Length: 248
Image (cartoon, rainbow, N blue to C red; front, top):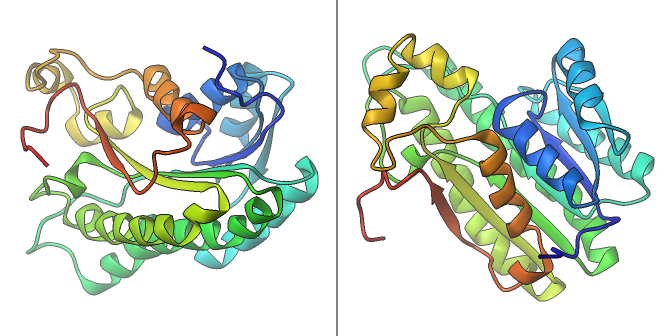
């Protein structure tokens, strides 16, 4: 299927590894020019070498939301516009109600909510000019089904989900879609950091009896960016191998 993305211009944050890198790879496979961004220049260089000539990178620390606008402007200047924005960020530290403090909440909200909001606000004018845009945030399944041990992620990413739902309604008439994707258990360093050597046991919790692939996850993002998905907006899509058991 031709997704109609050839020649589009994209920014993917948190894309030097994991789900962000999977998203960048899938977009590049569809003919998109992609700027990837993260804090680690060495990891970015390695990722760009693997992604090929349609990829370039920007080093940026998005734990500071004030850096988001400049990143979008630099990317749009380099690419000659911006059609697609994929917001991804590393998760905040693990912890429950009794063992995180207010400063931890502030850091999580800056990194996992406000930076994506600022990226989106900066990207929309470029998409309005082109009368075409796709904005996607990678959140977490725990927005839908909060994890007791990830209260910081639960709180910040739920706020971001509400923002995206509201933004989707505001920009829909401009041929811009805004959606969030809620990953379950995927083969990422974050999952290993949280669960150590227990990944086989984690996979057995999933009805599909396997961990998700970042490349397959990226293909879902590419479809949501496609022409065929132009009527899909304001959606929060679980990609979790059937782990979430609710109806809504």
